[in-house]
Image 1 (tube, rainbow, N blue to C red):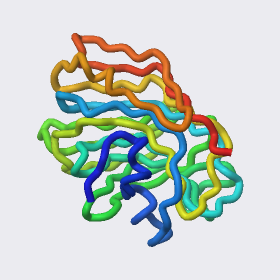
Image 2: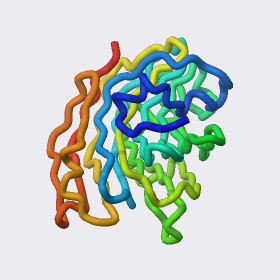
Image 3: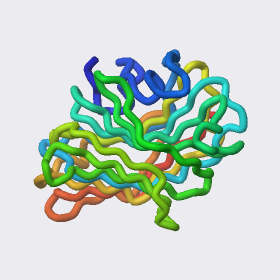
Length: 234
C-alpha cells in the first residue's frame, strides 16, 4: 500500500497506521481524521525531527480507537509514528481514566511494530524525537517527559534514509469517541540533510488546525514551527 505524506490526504487514500495492526484489538474500521499540519515532500531528506506534544485529556470512555501521532515517511516505505492511544480499556499500559498510552511505533508492509508503552496525562509534555542513526538506515524514536526527562518509550528500526515528509495525525477508528480537548505541539523542529529553501512552502493544514512561528535557519537546513494547534473533535 502506498503511503502519502500529506496528512489531509490520508483519509481518502486509506493509509493504514496505528490502529490496523495495533494491540489489543486485531481488526478495526477506518473512520475519520481530525486536524493536522504537515510539511513535505522536501527536496532533501529528513535526518532528525523532534516535537513536544501536550495531548489534552483523553476521553473518559472510548467506543473505538483514537490515536494522536506525529508521523514521518517517504511516501512509499515505513511510517515512523509514535502514538498516543485511547482504547476502550487502556489499563494494558497502566493508564487510568483520562490518560493516554504512549509508545514508539513503526507501520509498514510488516504491520505495526511497537516499543514499550507508558501512561501519560493530558497536561504532560511528551517529547518525541526521531533521529537517523550513524549507520544511515536506522531510525531511533525516543519518547520522554519533557519536564522530568523520564523515558516513556523507545524503538529503533532500519527504515532507510529517505524520509521526505512530516506531519501530525489525529486518527479516529471503529466509530471512536473523538478528542474532547485540543492538542498542542510545541517547538517542532525538522533538520534536513541539506538545505531546502522551499520546504516551508509545502506546509498544509486540515480540519481548522493552525500553526505559528514557521521559520528556517542554516540556509534552509533546519525548519521550526513554534506551535501547532489542533482543535478537539467534540
